[in-house]
Length: 384
Image (tube, rainbow, N blue to C red):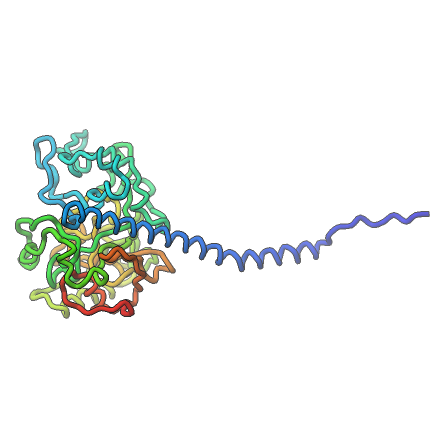
């Protein structure tokens, strides 16, 4: 008489042990997988900046000049000067050099970045109408960092609203050209500069520095192309107006509770930075439109296609309330920013075409020196 064998299988305890082991393995492997993915995203960001560097040098080869941060005077459109001082950014002028010839050929130079669009409910012509075929519907992947997940949910953010009403969305920009060290210590001291000085400005201290605008060339970079920043990465704005205490505050722009005073010195700039860095955590942002309009630039504003070397990387951006208008002015602080390596630094493109990692902890004076083309600073790579 044969005994019936008991059906083989796992007991409940054995199953629970196996599940626990799998959970532990996943917990150990997941950070490694995430780190590998971020390393790949950072490498893509580096490649984007290198492509920009090659494009800028090819532009210089063709024009004997670096691409301007803003083309001024801006073109009239439809017989009317509707540009409101907004000029074409560097990111438009290098399109032919980043294998975007089709976008460049579709661009209407006479239209510029603005045009006339009469719509019901709007008082007169609205902005951001010219060249919408390119700017509302063509994504330029070279201009976007894969580590920055945009927080653009509905598109109804100030200047971006018109894009949405036209059926498109603003094409975001994660890179910016360097316009120099603390503006009020010397004006446009970086490789990025408007084509010409622009009339007068509301504050004499700013007006006196407008003459520093004008074309730049490789020959004008007296500090050395390997010691001068050309461009860096930036995070785009957000639909949310984050407070200073938020981990995402670097997407925003804040107003300080103290302004720069004349005469401008390194000490007054540092006092301004202290006021910015000392803002209470509950302070609410007043602007959030950085990186929304890659086609637009403005001679006075550093949050449209530009950044400056006033504050070290990943600090909060602050305007100077003495000269503020509707966006952060050149004399404020608009640092580069990123999420790479936990937001501990930024990838930076130098004028020689190299891309280097610059830490948040870089010395302030070294940071100022990296921003200027002819400041005479002596800087070695181990300082950043």
